[in-house]
Structure formats: structure tokens, C-alpha cells
Amino acid sequence: MSLSFSPEEREAAERLLEMALAEDLGTVGDLTSQALIPIDMPGTVNVVARADGILAGSPVARLVFDRLDSTVTWQAHVDDGARLTRGTVVASVAGPLRALLGGERTALNFLTHLSGVATLTRKFVDAAAGTRAVIRDTRKTLPGWRRLEKYAVRAGGGTNHRMGLADGCLIKDNHLAAWRSANPNRTIAEAVAEARKHVPKNIPVEVEVDTLEQLADALSGSPDIVLLDNMEVPALRECVKLRDRLAPGVSLEASGGIRLANVAEIAAAGVDRISVGGLTHSAPALDLAFDWP
Image (cartoon, rainbow, N blue to C red; front, side, top):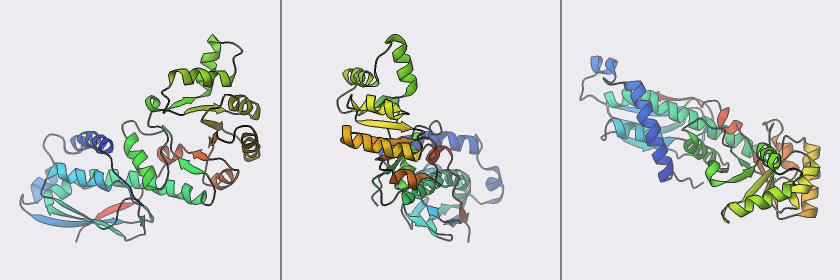
């Protein structure tokens, strides 16, 4: 797979790295290494997977050592997005031993978390394989980590939803409630039409519903996407049938209560997208370690 690490993602990584290294090294650095390791002593270490999973975060880990010592070399043996098995050597890192020790924990913190996101994403993607549904992330990300976590979702084969409120129009139930408080008895279709007046033409308009009746209302306004919130599988099937009959060009997105145990059945219902907050907010870290010779 082709996976790019964008300038925006690098910028986000640089901001996080500044804080991460500051909290780990403080103003005096690694006291233990300073006490025991000669300043010019070289070393080499392998980054090794201790569990099966999907790799993500290598560009960030490399940046850790770039910041600590520009002479450190990072030789990647596998790329982000690759499947790892226990014992896979991800990369070899060589340079001044003090720099390797000083950056070890910070580099692993990024690698284990982002690889955990990628690994969980791939499990959902594999479970939905053979259907039309794509697995998408949400805005349920750690503050400051959104770009990197969404990069990890792509490494796992998932697809990014909007980055934030500024680059997508998703009319959720609270938006509708607030809008209707000032516009009583207005329909969901009218809310979609009102949104289109203010949203740039290249931005899709999506609206959330939770009943078949609300879906019929929404479809009459021709949104680009309808989010089906917390619906059971039989209801999802009925929604797909209604969409196919009334507005086949509208995409349907299932959201809410999506788990590995039910995602295959949800995907088989015929929805186009499945958004899963757990990809980012509940992904367990993937066990990776530095193996010293």
C-alpha cells in the first residue's frame, strides 16, 4: 500500500515531540546516561515487534532521534502499514548511545500507540472485507494527536472522516434540535437545504438520523451522506432498501455501537461507510521494544 506522511502530519508530530521530549528530558537531560555512558560511545539497537500487528509511526520515531542527534541513522526494514509478526525487526537505529537511550521511551510511546491504532483498524477492515463498506474514523481522538491518529488509521487500511468541524458539514441531532428551537416544525430536508446555502460547494453535507421516518425526510432533501445512528442491523437493511428506492446516489454511514463482534453483519447490511470511534479512543498499544545487542 502507498502511505504518505504529509507536511501537516509532520508539523503535528514536531509539536508533540517538543512537548514529549521536554517532559522526559527536562532541562538537564538523561542523568543516568550522563553518569554511565561516555559521551562519544556509539551503539546500535533494533526496534522489534513483540506481538502481531500493523506498523504505524515510523516517521515520528525517526524525528525523535533527528531532534536529539542529527548523526543518528534510522534504517527501516518494513514500512508503515506492513503486517508484523512477533520478532519482526522494524528498524535498526545507530549513533551515539546517549541519544539512543534518551529517545528510546519517547520513540516507543509514539510507535506503540500509533501501531495500536493501525492494528485495531486493520481488524475492522478485515472483518468488513467483501462488502461495499469502508471503515472510517471519527473526531474521538486524543487532543493534539488527531492528525497522527488519523494517519495510523490509514496505515491500518481505514479511511479518514473529516479532520475537524472546519472541513466538513455534519448536521447532528443537537444541531437539529437547536435549529428547530428557532424554526419550529421545520423538516430535516429543510435543514439540509439551509446548510447548503452556507457550506462551500466542495464540502459534502451529511445529516444524522435514527429512525426510518427521519431517513425518508432527510433523503427528500438530497444530502450527500446520511449517518444512521445506533441502529440495529434489521433497521439498517430497511434503510438501505429505502435509500435504494428514493435516492440511490446518497451514501449511508452506520455509526454508534460498532464492535468487532458486529461490524461484519453491519457491513453486510449494505451501508457504504462505517464510522468507528474506538479505532482511536480505545485502541490498545501494540507491544514494540528496543532490543539491545
